[in-house]
Length: 409
Image 1 (cartoon, one colour):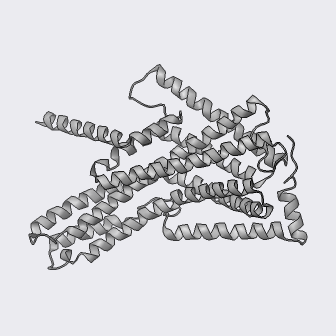
Image 2 (cartoon, helix red, strand yellow; image 1 turned 120 degrees about the vertical axis):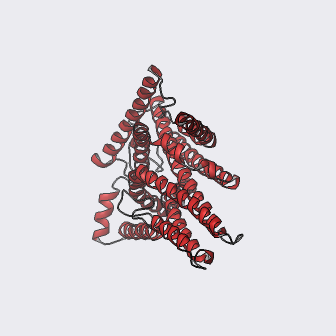
Image 3 (tube, one colour; image 1 turned 90 degrees about the vertical axis):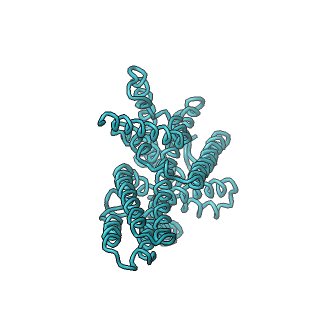
């Protein structure tokens, strides 16, 4: 008998894995395109070793570009355009994304996420919304990558322009420089793939919370049988406990990623907005268009990194409100229902439930507003310093952008 039960559980788990892989097919395809995925099956032998070598080679190449660009801009004082700093920040985020993919594979986190997420419980409407999220982010990131390619081509055709200093990216000329551009575009594509995975995972969790809330709203409204209500509550309590486990595991996986990306996105957004401010005053159409696209991307990234986890916290609060608003759970008084409801509320209020920034704080709407205020405050300060006509403004401009319009070909 135990062997029969074990066989049944194994079949159920295998069916869940197949269903999860089917519903994450597009996401897995995007991740595979990065060349950073080396685990496909449990035992692959020498082929997996080759994939690891490929991933290590890609990481080394991107790291060399980042180290060179950083040293060129900050150590040698060359090409200190705002856009150059923005590209370096994006390149750093891309490298971090590549390292996170490898780290998650070593720990088995990607496979675990695909397996434990409640794909089977999502209605068709939620799956369509999930697909729309992937398409939306994919298309928007593709536009930004296209803008990057246009900037590179424009720089190659107009060496004397001030859009971007090519030496910030690579010391080479000719075809080697073109290969460096390919590396940069590849790293941005990898970064976009990881950001898409992050958004899809949080979107799935949000929809599961909303589904539980909808079920709570229905309890007791279509039947007077208290035993049926108790059974429904027990099932929902068990489902909610599994959701809490998923959320804690997701936070464990993404908390450092969230910290790094939000921490680097704030200065990136500030410098992008500062560059947009200068572009408007320059009257250069190409600079204005590029700045607008770059700013759009920064806003989308910040939205994905803050609003998606903030929505998870918001949905948890709405779930608790649904429990209190359903009067069928409270009257007439039933000690069994009351006990289950209290247990459900305690589960939902457990400390640290949500997506955090490396455990420092749960990402919520208030934290999003604080981040926006921080960005605007520092942007205002930088604009005042760059536009100031007094001695402090001259010192800052000399320190910050002493080669704004002068760089070597």
